[in-house]
Length: 480
Image (cartoon, rainbow, N blue to C red):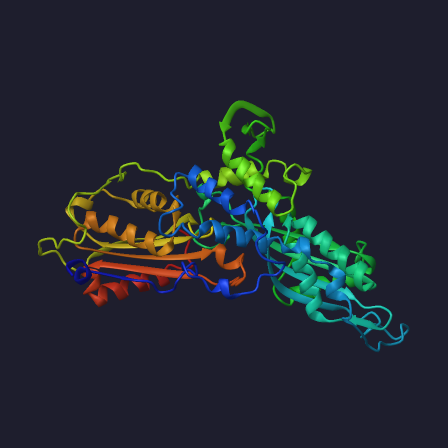
C-alpha cells in the first residue's frame, strides 16, 4: 500500500480507447468483415515491424480496431448519392424573377459548419474538415437540408485530398438535385510530422482552405458567390483570406520522399531534385499496407495512391518501440522505487518549479492513430534536479510520446520520471486531442482529453496543486 499512499494517479477524462469498446454494439454501415480479410494479419505485421508484440495487453484487439476504423472510414466507396437524394426533393413556392429571388426560385440556401473527416490519400492518415455547402434552388424545388451533409460525407469517407473532395461534392450535388448552382467551401486540418509540433494548441496543425462552385456561382463577379461568402463571414469564416492557404503543401510526408518500387525512397531537396541518399523502408510493412488497401477494394497501384503505403509506414516508423536505457539530458533514473519517501528537509514546500505547454505527438496503441497536445510539469526542487531546463523536459516528453502509447500511461510515466529526480513531489497534466475520437464511429470532433498524475508532496499539499493548475490557466493564451 505504500505506493498507493504516496502516489495518487487520476484520469480526468478517458481517451475513449478502452479494451472493451462501445463501438462493438453499433451496426457498421456497409457490412462486416469479409471472409479471408487480410486487414487484421496486415496490422499484426505492422506491429511486428514496429517491434511490438500483438499478444500483449493493450494490443491484442488493435488489429480488429484498426481494420474496423479503415473500413468505416472508406464506406463512401459503397454508397451512392442517388440513394440519398432520391425522394428528398420537395416543392417550394418562389417569387417572380422580375421581383427578385427567394424560396424555390433562386433563394440561396447555405448549410454551414458541417464537421467531417476523411483519409489523406497520400499518407492514409485521417484529417478533419469543416464543410459549408450552398445551393440556389430552381424549378420550385428544394432538397432536404440533411442530404447536403450526407452527400458531403459520402465523398469524405474515401481516400481524398481537400480540393478533389470539394470538387466531387459540388459536382455530385449539381448533378443530383439540378439546382441553378452549387458552392462548396472547406477548411481542412492535417496533422504535421511529430518533430514539427511547435505550438501548444490546434495551431500546430496544417490548415488549408478550398472551394468549388458551379452554375450561377461561377465567374469573378457572381453575386451569388458574393452572397455565399458573406453568409460564411457571419460565422467568422473568411474564405477570401483563407483561400491563400490552398497553395500550401497539404500532406507533410509527400514532399519528403519519392517512393520507388523496391521499397526505398529518395530524399527531395529544396529545389525539387532528388538526392543520392535514400532511406530504407521495410518492404514487408509496405506490402502489409498494400494488402490492406486491396482488402478495402482499392488499387494501391492507381495513380492517386502511388507511394501512399510507403508514406504510411514512414509515419509509423517514427513511433517504433525502443529499448534504450532511459537516460535523457540530465534525467538519470536511480534504481530506487520512485515511490520511496525521501528524507524531509527544511526547504519551503511551496517553492515548486514548472514547465508548461510542452508539445508532443504520440500514437494511440489501440487504433494506430495519432494523439497530440501539450504536457504541463510541476515539481518541488531538489539538488539532484539542478541544471535541468526546459529542453530536458521536452526531451523527456518526446521519449515517452514517440512510441505506441495511451495517454493515461504516458502521464504516469512522465510523472514518475520527474519524481525520480525531484524526490519530493511531481505533478503532470496532459491535454490531448485524439484522432481516434474523430475518425471512428463516435466522431467526437471537438472533444479533448485531460489526464493528471500527482506524486509526493503535491498529493498532500492542495494549495500547491491548485497554484500549479492555475498557472496553466493563466498562461493558456501565451506563446511559449
